[in-house]
Length: 200
Image (cartoon, rainbow, N blue to C red; front, side):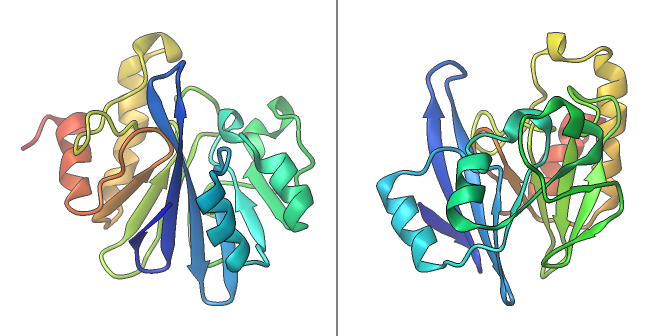
């Protein structure tokens, strides 16, 4: 587990099936301690997270990133927030569902993305410094320093999916923290624009 930005730690669990790191985040924002899309914790990650306890919230970006949220919700006795549009397809005990444009704990904005793998696919935007964008399956960080889409068979229409993702370019962000693959800490918006618009 490593601190990747001020107040933000990331840990990873390698998926043999996907041949990718599945990433979880610990955000410390003011008095809030928030986990995002938590995969299994290594011993080191577990120790660091427990040092930051109590954990207040777990935020999930889509139905397939529930991961270890349910057991961690029980362990930390914290609130679990999931996208409203995905909630009926998830087996969990959510405290609250969230919608597009909602301000979540820690001053995090929910950005729902249309025509993605699941109807509730959402990004999380933190407007501090250069801006931080957190995504689940919307963008994959592979190879390192570059972003790509999921395989085309995950979408009903790939072009519509790309169009839905272009909404992200309206936000001022420099860092992109991905649920799968390698996060981009500097210059991320240019990489997203290159993928979605073909710009340099």
